[in-house]
Length: 279
Image (cartoon, rainbow, N blue to C red; front, side, top):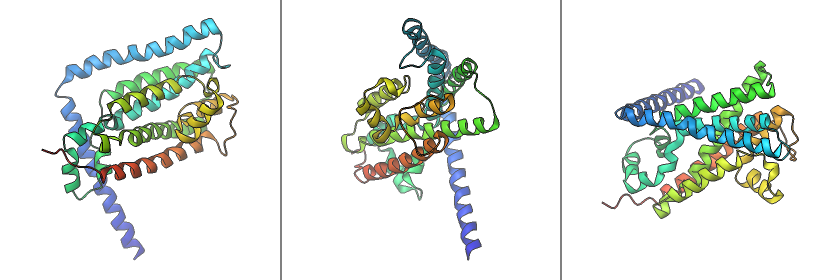
């Protein structure tokens, strides 16, 4: 009985993975129909990230430090944030455009299929352009690791991978939660812009520069601090002014899973209010 259930579960898992693989391949083929758009974005993205790292450099040249953090430490913080952002942009950028799915009636087809709608939405798009975000973020992070003399031990590499994946899951889940407002309002572009700006600003600088109340909000309500601040404090040995019950390598993925479960619940709640395209 137990073995049959395991076999049934494995068959279901293989089926879902095959659907995800096919959906992602189809999404990538569609994007490759317009190669010049991809090439132009590949050229612009490095310049966008360069402005961020240059901003930190010039600020620290004039102010010496920001919240007690030097340029190498800020670059490390920025690098972790960029890497998690890049992974999120590759696999979850469709959250930014959830209102398009609502207004075009895209969920009509998903609701008719014998598959979980949230799963279908999550694997419906793989953003090729986001690969450049990952590559540039990786370059910034490696550069910062040289500056801070990061120790490339096996345990540190494993912790780093787990943290970045957890941080990407937090980012994706935050967008899912807030952009699900489109199920009620039919619009989420303003919310997307607000959340994107908020995440980029709050992961660029250490949390300690903000008022205590805002720090608590960005830790307990919208867990932005777990994306790059707490991991950076952990690796660099900096006092975060918060006492965490566990290492960032445990806390960040754990918070990522919690926010993901919450995001799925909010998405499904919104889906119950879905009214099709009206056409």
